[in-house]
Length: 483
Image (tube, rainbow, N blue to C red):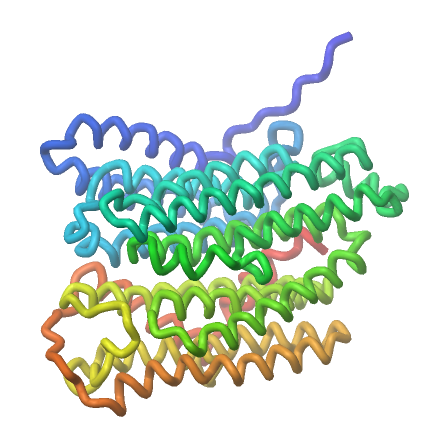
């Protein structure tokens, strides 16, 4: 008896193939040219590879759903949307960190190759059609970021951050795998489409399925730093080199939400009542932690870490109703969060050129010395707080509208309440910049790649705040796979 060979079509995988070949090729180039400026060469090669992958993804942007390798790999509008966000989440930290990487002696080939492998893992997660493919992408991304977090081997904080992330991440991967094994035992399949069929046939009644889904959610909640699986996040954000913190603050979250989409609405839509309640609990806890734990923070990176936990809580609200409006609202929120977050970290990196520390008090009087830079940072802080007419307000508005339309008025009210609390620490940064006197001069010049990233992020935060139509339409077209 011979088993049928799955249909193999490499065309939908061209972006992944480009990134994989670039990572392997640039690894060799970096080793070969190590003593002759190989780091810069590999860096430019990395940027070009990501741009080429983005062009291929954009060029394939239609409404078709294409499967290959027997359904293990899926190319659809949702995957394209998430990959485009991941490209931005990979390329922007590289560009805005170029000077910082040189100062930290991190401008070498291995750093950029690890970025590419992490990106590749996230792309595979977005296109996964079964748990095997999803886990492969998850571990490729995670292992790369573990190394990046502890990349500065001469820095004790970075080493501690990398070790913490690795140990806790390994535990989360164990939870995820155990959950998958329970699901396989209950349904007899690992493909999302096969599991969905088993669910419709009554598989959701199996206790192993329910426990497996909870464990899988726990593993993925760690990757997106949702409370109460967030304990690693503040320490790792603070201890990692700032370029790495900027990178890990966006790409793993986008990839993690892509995985959550594939697993929950994709495979377990019939169990929405069960996993919706779990996500509602996670969202409220994340909102509370993000709002209250950030208030006493004095380090800007730790504050942004707790802030990101709160943003994950808002995004999780969109999944709770299980409606197309909710699914669309998450994509809108992730896109807006990406550029708000990148802009804020770009300001932190620009100030680091002038030996400005990571304490919020180091930003005292910035508006008196560098008014444009302070204004840009204020825009990002106001947007994160959800103040109109900025993009952050649009993102939260659509999240809350989805919750209300789905019958979760209490959850929407909780989101509004915690948003008001969180506004305190965002406005504190603005207060320090504008209403306190500087104790030092700020001599840095903004230009080059950092200036371009700041300009792009500021433009999109302002533009999407008043003209979000195209973003809304793109997100709407991208969630058709789940409806």
